Image 1: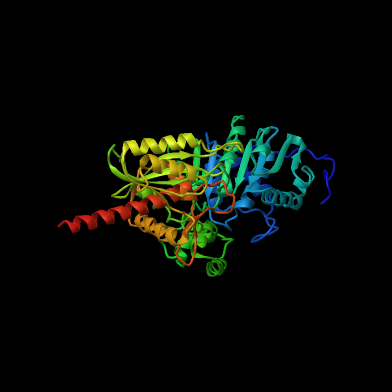
Image 2: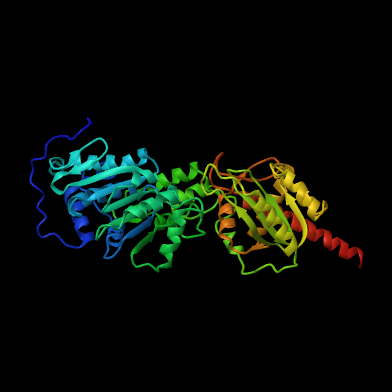
Length: 483
């Protein structure tokens, strides 16, 4: 397709006299009257909205709805429906409608544009009215534009969308979502519509929005979740139909043999997440889904209690954490210093040292276990002030020590033998942890080298819990020796 418009528009505007006034009904009418399916089942035939697609349109474009989230497994026509709704917005939306399609990158967002272009080409009535550019669609009669954008905060500024479609919300960052919401809401009926498969981690904007939608507390927020029942067998075909409306609807466009082929070739957690719409662990996360949250209790550690502290420090880019653990296995964050995103930022070492001193004054500290990298001088100073037998080096890079400690906390979390105070910062660091296989056992690591998703507080928690368990065992042996 050459650059620039296909030609000057001379056709009169479409006659929409007598059409419904309700937002959802007008869009359904346009899609069924004017759009042609560009590919797949029903290709080159009129676009047939299935009941579940009508349900999505009715809910998302309902009165007073400003934000809509649809959680839907792959291969259920998310991108095709987004393209259809984008085109409908050009013709039946606000004057000078602006449709933005935001995806993980420019290539992904361009897929929606490609489908929309093909729908225009397949209907002569649309083709003679819409100007098709390489990077956008333009409808002169309504001064309306459909534009794909990458999920980058800078790309979203300066727009006034009537419809903003976020494709695959699970890969969108907090910063991008904030940029998205900052440009919407200027028009009387503007809508942000996110359509996505579940994310692989609870530390995601999608999970927070899913929780918000499940609460049912926001009348301006529409939420629809398609997922197989929790705990179902991975080969349960009835469960497949519950989670995949394109498989269970009248005139389905998803086949069971296609799902079966996918089940045989990808890992079970990935199949459950992407093809059954379930929120699961094992895709990336170290801990089972929801296991850490289930260990939260309302407890404050009183002054004078015997505890173990663990320290994992950095010089600048990463975060620095001081985590405590009682001898009966309760974790809390005593201090956490994180880079706010400033490349010039450095850990405030004096503040960290003060926090260590305060902790020794407040609690009966059995031990402070310190990862020595980059902090040897401070560790030596702490040992001089608080006792060399109580301040020890504990190298978190030594797999022969770290792997058993990692397994100890994993087992404690999954059996609820450990508790914590629900600190959101520690929960985020725990959620960032990916299991790394080694001959000695699993270790925790970031999702990739240089990732901004920090895990230092999680590492400190692993060390603190391990050392608290050691001291508990030591105390028990002493008790038995005096019996």
